[in-house]
Image 1 (spheres, helix red, strand yellow):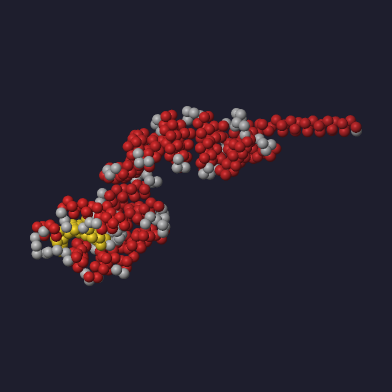
Image 2 (image 1 turned 45 degrees about the vertical axis):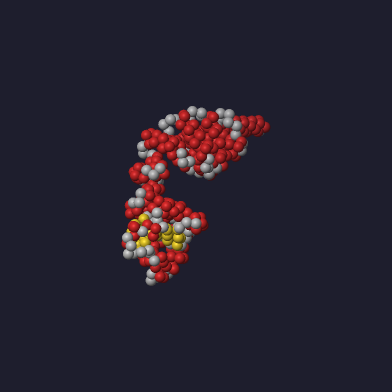
Length: 453
């Protein structure tokens, strides 16, 4: 009986020893098996193995690394981020953890969770681990650009190009930054290189179009922006830019059609590009004297964003149209009607007769004389140079200075400027010592009463 007890004890000791030995030997084998589980797509199994190791050894950062990797594979980014940060803060990279692979993932996670400075640090470490890999420099440059540090961004883009001269995205980025810095010549060179390397990268055409717009080459700008329209991401922006080019080229009807395309094709009426399209469409309507339509666009913008540009001011300035027929006709009448209204105003207010009228982008210009019976061209000292501005913008001194120059060069006796807005202080000061009469909005309204409004 005693012999059996002894044998039982010995067998128990052997079993316990074998169990401990197996457990001890199996732990590293389990960690070594995780990469295969990941490769086979068995992400949950990999997570279970890693967790079981960490339960026994919380400071096993190799296990933490593989757990983070398994979470990444399983699209559990937040959990992966926690594991990777733990590894990053505590692990010694002695070969057990593939450091370059880890830092690439770490950088992407920092970037995903908008921790740009930490992401940049990871990419800078990667440039030391893999000094011939241009993508690390490019990624760091992108982050610097996103953070608004254009100087560092362009430096890293250029370093990336030293390693990879065919990196079309880097040329595009350099061109984009140089454009913003108004270095149009070098920006154009970089973007044109980007086009050669990647003809289907429509961002190059977009910024080349903007450069042409800035340098007043409007026809080229429109052609380039039409190419940029092919990109669904850039389409709305390209159309808005093209529309403004058409406005500058005085092709107002085409500009209206272009802005309407942005508005009608957008699925999000609150999109910033849609608001800009509405704003510029209103400007087109304003130029074509379709003031009611312009007001509709401003009111739509105001409902979405009451601080958008000068929309609130515009609506306030045109509010009088509802109650003041004189201002309404002055601002909205067609060109022929406007000229006739101008003739009545100078006759009622200054006893002048119009001898010649010219439609201008801002309204109308007239040459007038006091004596209707005289040959007005032979009475130069009695010739008045009269301008009618129909705009809600304050008239600056540049306008008054041009009138002064016109009086001197043509020998006109006096200038008169009518405005449906007001004159700046510098305009008033400049006109005081010169033969120029300024008629601001309130005085113009008084004249409307004299002509029957």
